[in-house]
View 1 (cartoon, rainbow, N blue to C red):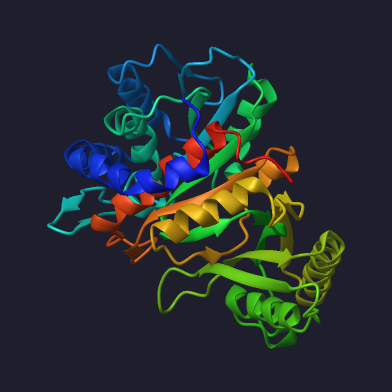
View 2: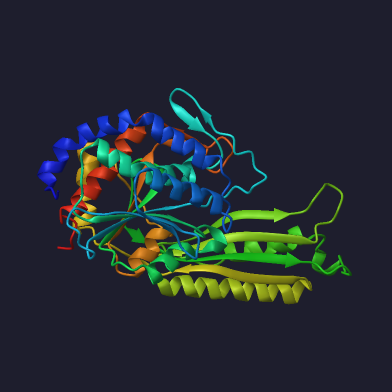
Length: 391
């Protein structure tokens, strides 16, 4: 039944208690989700597990689409096909199948590769129907639960794009779920270009040319040239160097090197200008050094966002304030950007606190999960109540 904000806020403490009563189910779903490797383009086992959990929750409309996305639809009481709320979490992680995916559950935390990004988000999808029942919440809207594939890196959020291109139902609003950090509130997206520069040195090469002695030094020239690109403070712009890979041992000259980076800006034009300048740098250093220096652009985003005064953003703030959650406003370049580009009002929320992100010791703390899930359920109820329209 649809409720007003004034009716939802006093219920948040009771929702926290309802979530706490389902601790064992939530943690079991988290552990079983995280112990199944799900590198990008290889998420099928994890998505199948999600679909099985949907069926066990009694969701009759459960499917896996052609892109491998797992979809479960909890029908609303209004029986209105036009009222649909999308809750989305990405299934893939940065860890490949060779990584140890053993998960350790301790008194106050869960530790293991990928538990925060984004096994917890997927576990939330798997548990959410049960949590709503436990909290005594029956929505008028249909609740569309989506575990997406091909989100990270070269996946370029293509799982979500496929779903939106082919979804049989209109989406009125969406919430993206990330494991950490509690307090995260994203409602804007920056312009972005994500790329990789590779340096390949020919087998027959004059190593005295321009003093070069390794692909590493040639890549270093590329990095120094990129650092020389002037970036404006307004619109805010940055270049993030994500990873560098090269070489195999101490005494063998590296013939391959690669750099992964992102350009981020509030201006679409600046993103494209800087991307073009980096392409020129790669071509110039390739010509000077005789090595093959190539730029591969693997993802692009356009800047955009939901207005600060939009009912969805305002409702999210109210939930956080009522639960004593300090909001951390940050833009997003992931699922949120795709939803915003399609004019679907959306926000991204974090569920709990964590540490050691993207390491084998990735950790999520258990107690804050109850608060994080209460904010999510409260926001879903607010959307269902029609309080998240643009004003």
